[in-house]
Image (cartoon, rainbow, N blue to C red; front, side):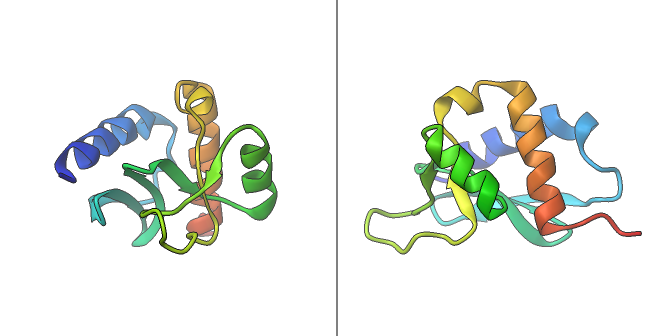
Length: 114
């Protein structure tokens, strides 16, 4: 059941790869009933029946929720996953926004090493 989500997430990350920081190791794994992407071992993105979700700072999450995003719950009565927002379809279809939000998520989760 999770295999299609893992495949889709890997395809998305391949499209984003030219924009991603070169010093960040990105991996994907099965996660709950979907897939998750990790930056240097820390989860920053998931794709599941709940939708495409990113781990982001408070202000960005609030902005995205105002644009139709929702707090992430993997299952109907599960607790809300702190720091995550499920992106609305209007954003998931916008490659420029996905790149910008993914970079922001990476900076939030795995800041560049200096």
